[in-house]
Image 1: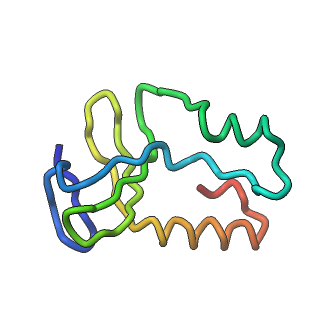
Image 2 (image 1 turned 135 degrees about the vertical axis):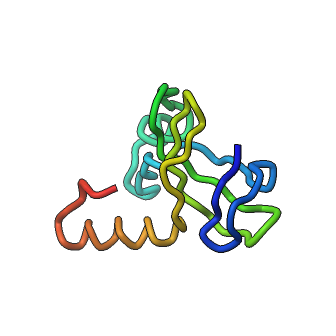
Image 3 (image 1 turned 90 degrees about the horizontal axis):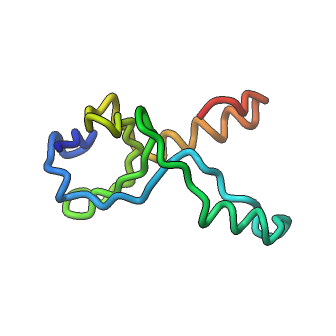
Length: 101
């Protein structure tokens, strides 16, 4: 599988470290119950199909990336810097559009 890094171009997936599903949002550690933290840390779906994932370009630019990939075929739909996704989430939350991923 090859991943097109927005900064380095197309690279072999061996240059990247896979973190996991990019969709879960961490509960607020100060207000979250033990059950909510347990669910966040340990309970994950293993879907077949399109998934938004976090990858770290460890052997390249050292950027965190959000990769949208089909887990059945490994076909990559898009790759973008995680910071851009985080900014969009923050903006959506501030404007009341929290449904934006």
